Length: 264
Image (cartoon, one colour):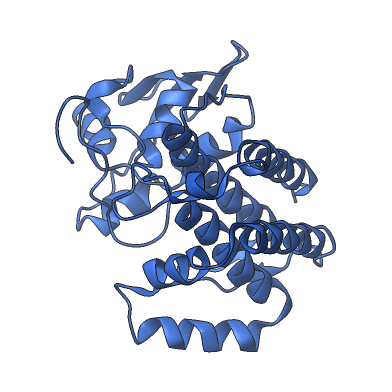
C-alpha cells in the first residue's frame, strides 16, 4: 500500500504557496472577481475552507459527515455555492484564520489515519492518499483562479504529478458521467513535467495515446482552460473524445472555460 505522506506533504506545500499570495491582501482585494462566475477571491478561499472542513468530518466524524451530506441533498445544485457564500461573508482575517486552522487539522488527521482506511465522500469513498490528492487538486485549481484575479503568477511544480495521476485514473468516470461507455482498452499517456521529466501511464503499445505538457493536462482535467488553448495531442478516436470531456473532480460535468477570446 502506497505511503500517503508524500502527497500530504505536497498538499501542505501547495496550500502554503497560495497562502503567501493572499496573506497580505487589502480588504478590497478579497472582493475582486475570479474566473468562476459570481465568485470573488473570498469565495475561492471560503470554498477551500469549507471543503477542508467537510474532508475533516469525513476522516474524523463520519456520522457528522453523513448529516452534512443529508443537508446537501436538500439543495443538490446549490450547496457548494452556498458554502462559499457563507464563508465569503466573513471578515478576511477570520476567513484566512479559519482556512489555516482547518487545513492544518485535516493534514494532521490524514497523517494519523489508520492504514487502509477509507472515508465517505460526496462521490465514491476515498483512501487517505486519494483524499489528500483531491484536496491538492482543488487547492491548485482554485489557487489558479485567485492568482488570475490578482494578476499573480504561480510557477508550476512537480506537485502536479498527483493531479496528473488522478486525471488518468478518472478517465472512465469522465466517460460515465457523460453517459458514455468507457473504452475497454487502456490509453498511453505521456506528459512532460515542469522539471522536464516524462511521466508515463498505460501500455507503451496502446493504440490510443495522449501527450503534451503535464501542466496543460492538469488545466484540462480541472477545467481551468479550454482544450483549444492547450498543447495536448490525442491519437485515436477514444483518446480524442476523452480530451473533450476529461474531468478529475467528482460531480456532474462542469461547463468548463471558453476558449481565449470568447465569452464563457
